[in-house]
Image 1 (cartoon, helix red, strand yellow):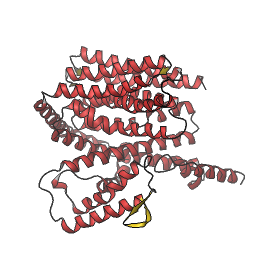
Image 2 (cartoon, one colour):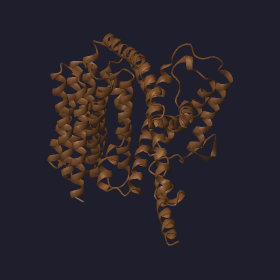
Image 3 (cartoon, one colour):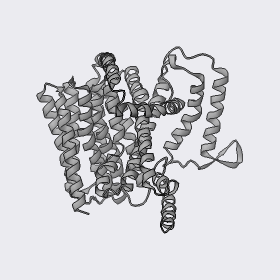
Length: 491
């Protein structure tokens, strides 16, 4: 009975803190389950599996086809698709998070730079390794691959030099953002004369992915028959229980891009729910309960209610007057499908990490381990899911280009914009950067992984070998171990 007041106090303390995502996992443990580990750990583990399944379906069924169709419709090369679609899709949440963090007090903490670098090391080592293991051996375009890796290496080296100087000026912060603009312009210029090759390359990769899936299907079916009593089969059956609600929720909020998949109910649900979800995604800039004048001049309504009313009326009119499916694929629906897929991947990646962090706290794991694993991955889980889905879909060239363009966008645009705002506040003086050996280690491992990948792929005649995937994953494990040791020793 003595533990009951303690549990109530912990519950009250957790409820007082705002939830970092959709669900407050600490409140589930402390309040709903009364801090009972025997109940909390299995339930959170099931939620973890649900988040993984949600990410896999969102990336494989919606995000990857949307990227392929947008690249084909816009006639983008794999490199251009990576520096625009993939970089914006995977990097925009980080950029918005950095900008939103600066709206509060305290500015840009040291952890912000460490998180960007740790995420870069995770993507350039672990994600590139995962794509290599899934799709290797595969060829990469020599010019575009060398350009992407070299410019990312150059940008990281410049930022490392700035960090070692312990201060950054406004012109240097602006230069970081402009460097990414130069990078996109260079990609556009190099791909300007190879539009036809870009389309044939994407179509060839999609065909190769379909052929590979067709060849693997009999093997996977036979393998499944041989392991009916295995643990994997049990887990598969468990995940299939929530396949229908996951698929149903995604169809309600992500438009279908193919006329053959047109459904009046789902289209009306998309019209009604998508604007509200997009408004929620910008809630850090525009609060949902902001009061605005609508129809009645003397009454102010909450913003979310106005958006819901307008979208609901549009959905009703569409349901009433729209009778047949469109004859051709609409680029507007494809673009909305891409944006909504990005929202769900970013949101569910955050939920997955919050759930993992709660499990780590419940199991009393050291803060250093949590900080350098779960918390350091951040939105890079979205990069992992999206790039692996593209590789499985037979498009490793776009995936491998996105592994460099996405983190470069985070570093130059996300972190660069935050630094521009910081340095502008102290102009003409320099903004002082706090030194920490963990950040130096992250810089070293990031530069090492980039240089090694460039050398190995060039040595292999611009084909990504499978063994290099294992090497990169081993390098990231080494980086994690060293980082944990440094964090533990520094307290």
